[in-house]
Structure formats: C-alpha cells, structure tokens
Image (cartoon, rainbow, N blue to C red; front, side):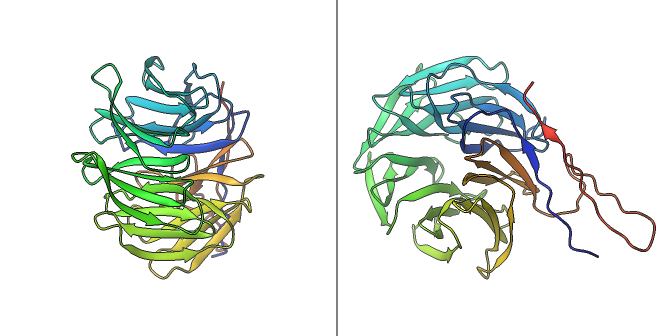
Length: 327
C-alpha cells in the first residue's frame, strides 16, 4: 500500500495567532476543544471535527491561556486585560472575572472544577475558589520571571508552574510553599500532565523532557530539529507530538526517541499542540491564525476523515478534508 498522506483539517475563524489550546475529557456529547488567540476571542469547537460551537465574548486584550473542565461545562481564559475569566461553556455567559494586576498567561481547572489556578506577569501563581464567588484563596511567589504555565497535579494537592526564570516549581498547597524545583538551560515553554497524571512533559529550547510527576525525576529528554514551543504525549505513552519555530509538526517514538515523521501544514510557527482525550487525533495552533487537526493513524475513518478503499487491486486510501469556518 502506498504511503498515506496526512491531510489535516483546518479550523479557521481566528484573526490573529493561536497561542494555546485545551481539550475536555470525553463527555456524553463527545469531546471539545478551546483555543486561545491574540484576537481576544476564545473559541469552542467540537473536538473530533473542529466544527465551531461558539465564541466567548468579553476580553479586551489578547487571550494567552485557556482551559476546559473535564465535562466541558466550564471554560476559563487568561488575557492581556489583566483578567482571568470563567465561562459557562454551554450558554457562553461569563460566570466570574478574576482581577489581576498584570497579564494573565495561564489558567487551569482542578479535577472537580472547584478551583482555578492562574499564572501572570506579576510572577505570581494564584488559586481561586470558584464557589466563593471567585476569590483568590492561595498565592505563591518565588518565580523571578513571568509565569508561562501552571497546572494542578498529584490529586490536586500540588500546583506545578514554569516561568521565564528557567525553572519549574512544585508548590505544596497544604504547606503553602515551594517544595521542589527543576532548573533548565532555556525558558520552559509548555507543561503538560499525561492523561494518567504520572508524566510531566516540558519543552525548552530544542528539547522535550519527561519527568515523573511524583518525584520530578527526569525520565528522558529528546532533542528535536527546531526550537520547540509545545509537546503532547499520547494517552498510551507510545508516541509524542511537538511543534515549534520551523512550522512543522513532529511525531516521535516515546520509547526509542526516534523521529517517526514530520509534516508541514502551518504557515507560521506552531505555538500549541495537544492530543485528544481518546488519542485519535492531535490539534495544533499556530502563528498563522489557524488550528489544525491531525490524525494519529492516517487512513482511519474518524470524525470528518473518510477512508475509501476501491475494490480494484490498486487499493488506495484517501482522506477528505474540509474547511471549518466560524459562522
């Protein structure tokens, strides 16, 4: 059989660079994808097709970070207007606006949607209680640079953050202080917790590094051919994908560290990549203002990809692609 061509689905609708994205878990209605864009308008889409569901209207500046809770009932966004916002992801209405004193770069929910962690250019990591009308109940200082990403980890008992001070830090929420630190030779750009919560994926420079969440011990580190902005580990931990400055999407064997393939689909640097919760596809967001959805296994019928096998002996597999636009 001939080599199958990867045909990504292009999701347009944004007017500026797409800088971050997040998938929900699998829900009764499938799964969802939210995107952060410098146009200030986070968008919600169906995760398997990229079909536009809605746009959250209310920020007055570039949106740098987004999050969906597990059930896709709540969305969060952090922006250059010094606010983090919580949205009802079903109605699109704003639920809370969390005031900060500088640009909010990152937002993330805990596993039961009770709390939101934010990181800002104040160099502070904050935790907000979403039941107490969105008040900040915890604040962690120590980073000497702008916070890039912050997430809950270890059954929500800890927060992990990385910043422009070339460090990753672990904060013990019960003690209210930093308990561990990892130092890098370049700014860490992205932070992802594996689907089972056991592996932390960090990108910095041209490296993708993997750490045990429990010990922060480095398990492996793989160098890629470009400065890398984001990486995502497949739920079954056999492969990972990453993207960065050279516009390409890379797929690597997680076990051996060997590059499997690379594709150029975007017309600008790749800022964000993530696997869907079922691992069937991965999404990328770029400086070119688009999101693209890529099949993990090319040629499979899934979402909008149709696999057609002619009955003649020259069997070939075609993928159909369609443009998804925000109406």
